[in-house]
Image 1 (cartoon, rainbow, N blue to C red):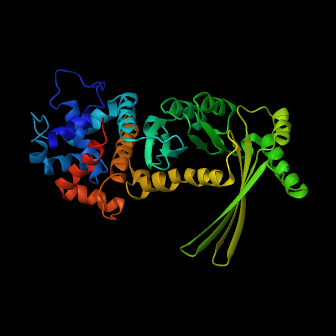
Image 2 (image 1 turned 90 degrees about the vertical axis):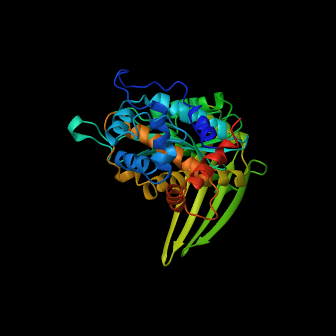
Image 3 (image 1 turned 60 degrees about the vertical axis):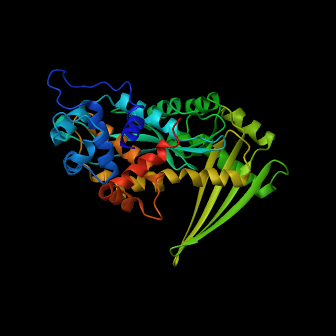
Length: 384
């Protein structure tokens, strides 16, 4: 079982080049990678943690890994991941996800960015790294990750994330930063549909969409050219009532396209969320551009699906993996450790758990090697 699990782990990193000088290499690269993955799965959050985990499980690792000089020291893990090509490491991650995740034609794929706040290195003049990730809402898996280039923003990274994804037949959701014509065109060209949040970065567009909804509300919704749905959520002292409207009347779209040509535009959407928490009451309106005339119910599901990347990825990385407090920063180590976290998160999401929290699953994987193997085996059984 151990040997087959490791073969499955390593077969997706065939082009991973060892960044070390050949002569003084004491530890095989794939052994280092496998120990790191297993350690992060089991609660490790630093190179010291990974090395200690390796030492604690040295006898077990020795049954299926090449360890001619024992378990690597924490400095070795640090040096290797600080120099390892992050593009190659991400490619291995992507190959892994393509092998284990079946992306359904109706999948909602959410793209969003997150800053690893303490990854800055003031002495080297480097700010914290910012990663843009793609999240499959129904599978609850991170599909891809790209680091935003220094002195740039998410807009430059989103096209690279999209290039790694098979989005045909899927709805791609992006917040207002990604509401750009070039990004919309790329999604449509790849066979996908978009649901793009519209805010101040498209000032004139937003003003006309707001005015369109206001005019239609005053004059009456066009029969056959609009749809409406609502949802009501209660819990933890909070009551949220959401109203969803979709406008796809040809005359309205023709007028909007005449003023602001937009690739593939087929509808516009509005979400009005009324929230009550105790005595506090708030109302928020959010506007969207759509490349398909979705029903209001499907539109609402896509918008809610987008927030999964915030609640089930970014929040979990901070609370369960303590990403925002990590001081890993040498070379490209912070970016590569981000890949390790996403790998671990995906594996744990699919693991047998009997209602265990993600935190408890990490602890159990560290305590129980049989459970750790079952975490790996759950994916093994899905690999071709």
